[in-house]
Image (cartoon, rainbow, N blue to C red):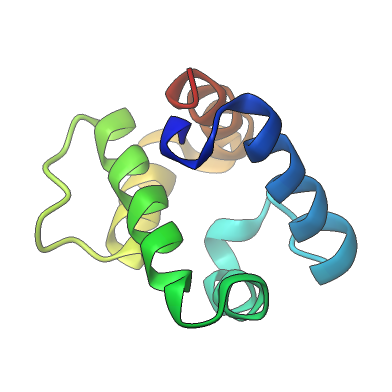
Length: 99
């Protein structure tokens, strides 16, 4: 997510999502509506840009083309591949993607 200004910005976004919007990033794949509400609260009409960046990074992590795949499709694929261990794996990959 380096397009958002680097690791410090990503850490700040995660902090706000978790503390102010109660979005648990370990279980977010099952709570995408909650994530979207939080992003809309934080970014208004531009929230879709952040969601598209999340989708793009997740697709890249999975080795998939993001075109035509929704965030739901991508998280479903990640759960199928990684099972319940996906959360810790995705956090690691998200950190790598921000570099």
